[in-house]
Amino acid sequence: MDIKVPFVHLFRLVLASSFMGLVAPLGALSGTALIVADATRRGISMARGVLVNLVFYLFDYAVFCLVMLAALGYLPTSRDTSPLMKGWQQE
Image 1 (tube, one colour):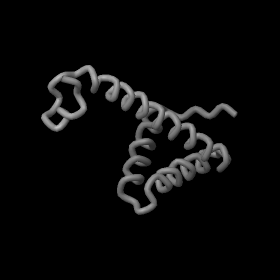
Image 2 (image 1 turned 90 degrees about the horizontal axis):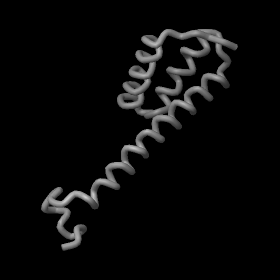
Image 3 (image 1 turned 180 degrees about the vertical axis):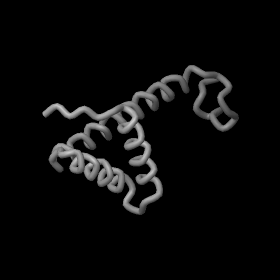
Image 4 (image 1 turned 180 degrees about the horizontal axis):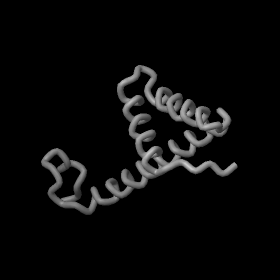
């Protein structure tokens, strides 16, 4: 099944999903519902919409983990990061 969706539409959908995840009480499930609803409106099955959302969150958290690992790797190499970090640094 080859479904072409414009990049601008996907960008708006991701922004709307992130916004819904922040303001709605259900958190990320609100964004999931938005993505699945858009997928079913385009003729994609609900299971495939949920799978696309799962892949989206896997990539989202994978990039977050990479950024966090890079930051944690940089932290021991920096010298005067903060006066609060004096106990962590070796003199």
